[in-house]
Image 1 (cartoon, rainbow, N blue to C red):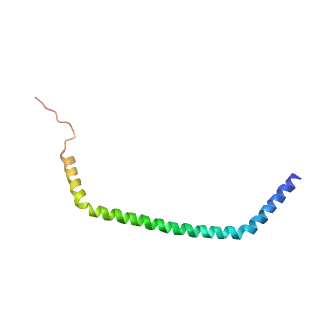
Image 2 (image 1 turned 135 degrees about the vertical axis):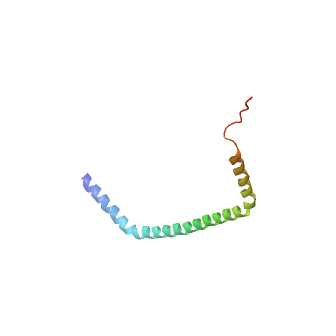
Image 3 (image 1 turned 180 degrees about the vertical axis):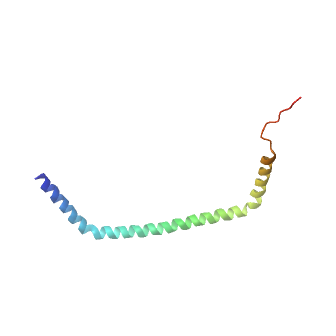
Length: 87
C-alpha cells in the first residue's frame, strides 16, 4: 500500500507540474529578459568606467610620465650593492 501512495503522490505532483508549466515558462522568460536588461546595463557601466579611467589617465599623463622617468633613472643608476668604504 505504501508504494501505491508514493505512485499516487508522484502522479498528483506531475499533474500539478503540468498545469503550472505555462506559469513557470512565463516566469522563466521574464527572468531571462530581466537578466538581459541588467546585463546590458552592467556592461554599459563597465564601459563608462573604462572610459573615465582612460580619460583620467590621459589627463594626468603630464604628471605621471615624468615621475616614471625620474623613478626609472634613479633605479637605473642606483648601485645594487651597498657602498663599502675601503681604507
